[in-house]
Structures are given as C-alpha cells and as structure tokens.
Image (cartoon, rainbow, N blue to C red):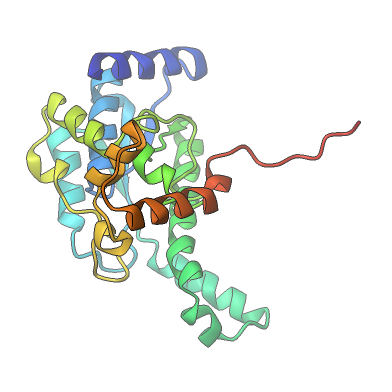
Length: 242
C-alpha cells in the first residue's frame, strides 16, 4: 500500500502541479508525520515544506521540530497565537461580548484550525504549492476534524485509510515509533482524543472496516457522531435550477 500511495502522490502532482511543492502542517502527531514522510518519498525533500503553527506556547512542539529534522525537509514556523487573539478582539469589537466568545468551546476549538489552514494556503500561494490534507478515514467517519480547517486541502493521501493503516504506513516509511504512537490530543482539554471520544481507535477501525463491535452503547455513539457530522465529508449542498 505504501508504494501505491507514493505513486498516487506523484501522479497527482504530475497532473495538478508538475514541479510544485507540497505544503503540509506539522503537528508532530501520526497523521502529519506519516503524510510528510510519504510526501518526502514521493517528491523528494526539496519539494516538501513543513509548516509548524503553535498557538502561543505548545508543550509538544519539540515533536514537530524532530519530525522535520528527521525527514530533512524545509520548515517554516508561524505562531498563530496573536492572530487568534486579534481575531477575537475584532469579533468583540463587532458587539459580541468577550465572555461569550471565551465560553464557546466550538469557537475555541475550530478557529485555530481554520487560521492554520489560512496560513497553509498563504504559504502555498507564496511558493506555488499544493496543500496536503492529513485527515484519516477513522477520524473523518466520526467528524473529528474542523470544517474548512484540517479537513481542507488540495489532495489527501490518507483519507481512505484507518488509523491502524496510517500507523502501518508510518512503519513501512521508516518513521520512529515516537511519531507513530504519539497520543493525539486536542490541545485544549489536556485529554487524549480517545479519552474525549470514549472509545479507542482500534474499536472504531474494526467497526468501520467489518461492522463488528462488542459494546452496543459505543456503536450507538459512533453511529450518532457519523450521522451528525456527515456534512463535513459530503459535498456542499447546492440548489440546482430545474
């Protein structure tokens, strides 16, 4: 599968940006690490630009630096902290109380992701690149992504692959285990993604791929999340004239 993904990336750039570079946000987690490794193998390290985007102080930013050093790719650091603060100030100036903004979890979790995507497309424009989407099938299935944030991009090498398959690809690509097994977290609650979800990705992967699941309450939760978040992965609804 690794060779197939690598060839798919090469074909995409041959058809959609011959000679262009790939621009990818680097969090230090498994998805961006594996995707960056595949891009590097497919295009060469000189055609991959990793973008590190901490929001103020990021406690695990060392993983992002370690990844770009391991792959030998160019990297750009853009701290989005002041941008997010400035946006909040601008919205508050429009008449919405700061307390309301601060108390809105959806705003606090989604806005940084959308700012990061704006940064990626800005850098892509400056370098004539294509933005890599790093989402995987498991997280997409339950909507664990931000619409027009990390769910955006020009091409997506991992969107049809489960978490287990992404990890396997990382090992085939020769990534150290610390990048593959780093526990994903939202950066806000201090909890891992699996803690927040209430089930493991192994359980989710098995259900997505086989339909098998042992805990019916978990099945109900997964089904509910999937239905509620289908709008994130379906094309935008469009009125069509008769």
